[in-house]
Amino acid sequence: LERARFHAMFFYDNVFAPTDPAAISSSPLSPRWDPLILVAALSLVTQRIGLIATVSTSYSEPYNVARHFASLDQLSGGRVGWNVVTSTDGGENFNLGQHRDHAERYERAHEFVDVVTGLWDSWADDAFLEDKAQRRWADPDKLHVLNHAGKHFRVKGPLNAARPIQGWPVLAQAGSSEAGKQLAARIGELLYTAAENMDDARHFYADVKARAAALGRQPEHISILPGVMPVIGRSQSQAEDKYAALLEARDPAATLRALSGYASLGIDLSNLPLDARVPLPEHIPETNSHKSRQQLLVDWIRREQPTVRQLLTTWSAGGHRMLVGTPEQIADDFQHWFETGACDGFNVMFSSTPGGLDDFVELVVPELQRRGLFRTEYEGPTLRDNLGLPRVENRFFAG
Image 1 (tube, rainbow, N blue to C red):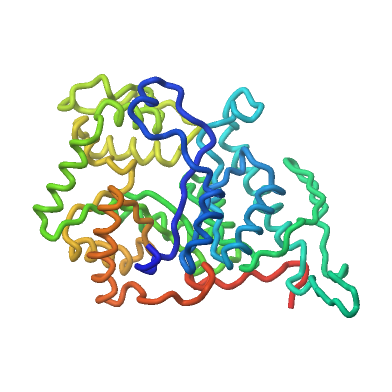
Image 2 (cartoon, rainbow, N blue to C red; image 1 turned 90 degrees about the vertical axis):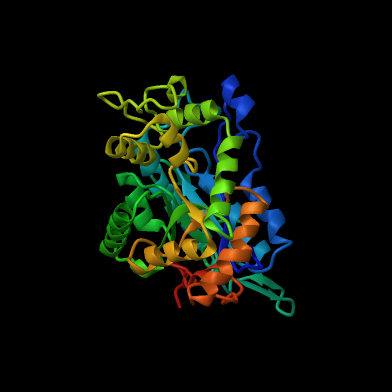
């Protein structure tokens, strides 16, 4: 990925593990690495690629999160980002009887980010004098004590870590519900989203950019990245053969059970014949988990009236687009979406590793470079440099 000049590698995460025997048996959902540990390790063996770790605002504490990311930004030379999530489940692992309510999670997330970024601004950039002659380690006038007292958090500060190299690590976000879009517009710099068609993508793009502008932000400082999973062949038939092999390797029942639970449909799709039409209850149960993905799937089922087999095939990437074709066709698609206002780039997910990753790096990246759509060198040493984002100035020590 770094050789191909990818901007960043993004690590998804959650704070729970399945207990259903069927899910444990058939799905590699647990155990998983803690993203913060992976980022620390990878920062030592890479030089330019960004490293973005997911950490929950619902089941973490702001001080710890601020300290982790400040330390990682120093360790990596300014290449880390925080994917801000509110989690789709997990309250039972954090002294709660159930998952936090959706509205409360997002209210808490706004305050959480405010506290973390306030802690990142604890020290001025030139606070540490390291003056042996004067025997002065730091300038006490360059320290700000946060003294935050809000609805969800009381945090005195200051942070016992130096200010991040980037000012703030890059803030990523992936919510597409109404509450998610408002959080994204307020704090997000990289937005991961799912869109099955260009009309939906353009609407989301325009909506979030307009919300950001209304909040006084510069829309060009937000990059919207729909997820896409390419299956690439040197010919169309080769790509289709690879895709067929991937589908053949899956467990249909396990995939359908996962889709049913993930989107909270209120039915178990795995009990239906593959050629049956997908039924939907008259009233879809309201989910306290992944509201935007539930709506995306329900809207698609109502519009397409698919069979279970078609659902299984189309939703192979969990609601993200599947692209099956040649490098030129993949590049055509990327170019069309990018040039017509549907996105600023893509969150590329690989159908397999190392095969799918190697195919993209060796076949699609050179085609995008030939068209002038992708760079051939990194722009600078930090993730912000390479995303075209300014370094964040300290709100308490401007100038």
